[in-house]
Amino acid sequence: MAKVKVALLGSTGIVGQVFVWILSRHELFDLVYISASESKCGKKYKDAVNWLLPYQLPIEIINHNINAIDYDKLKANGIKIIFSALPTEVAAVIEPKLKNLGFWVFTNASAMRYNNDVPILIPEINLKSISLIEKQGYPREGFVIANANCSVTGLSLALAPLMKFGITELYVSTYQSVSGAGYPGLSALDISGNVIPLIRGEEEKIILELRKILETNINVFPFCLRVPTLIGHLETVWIKFKMSVAEKDILETWQSFGSADIRTPSIPANPIIYTDSEDLPQTKMSFNGNPPGMPVYTGRLKDHNGRFGFVLLVNNLVRGAAGGSIANAEAFLSRYGNTL
Image 1 (spheres, rainbow, N blue to C red):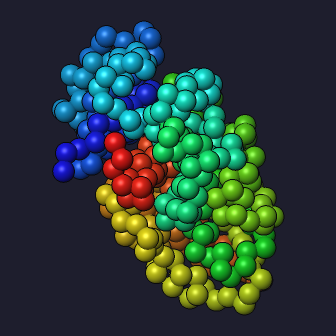
Image 2: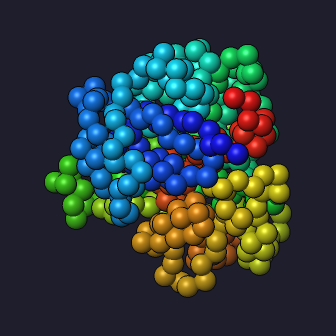
């Protein structure tokens, strides 16, 4: 089957680079159109990007030309699926236009994430929410599907299978790597040898997005900190259940968790991997797993006075950003078929 032509907006930022890395070798998608800021238009990708990933810049992409966002040119290239790694303030202007012109937008930006008719999709958890695109006018019109905030993605995957036990309280602290601030992001003078105890807007996103994704009103008490690691967000979690639960119940639930409804190239067969060693998970594991960076790792599960605590690791650039958007596009094609 011929690959589906796709475009990428915001291709040279850190999340855009992850999109490029994944899409360059993707079995379903053919990246034929890439854009970046106006100052980079007309350049070859290799000359426009400061490559930051721990992998070689894909040879398939190095000579791609950087384009402006040209709606007519996108249509002329036969593109319907557009991946967006745009900054939120730019996405707020561009993504509604793309939707109104009939494009199918899979975005990492938060600009439209809280609209009632825009799904925040994590296919293993809330695949049914994809039907919200019909409220946006699909198939007659275009649509936007958002992935969750990077920390929320990992947290949601760890919590979703445990919802059957009746979670009543959730305390979470996130220790978020500097790549989560984008590139260029924090000054080295601000973060080197330092921990910053506030990431503006992150704690509010955790509360809002968990409620939308998990369809719950559980009490959530978050703290979000920025730490001087490059890639990977660690989170410490404490939860209280309505039901009587033992550690083995949680471990068995995580082990058996997976999506029976969908299998695509980017969705792992085992989305949650428990690490037995008491000093794991660690951020250096961020690109582990199959596909690399897509599973969430949990560890240090313990019972303390009726509350259960654990540590989790999510790759904020792959599972929590570009990989999540690509998995959402795969889920759309699996659910609705290739209606190009």
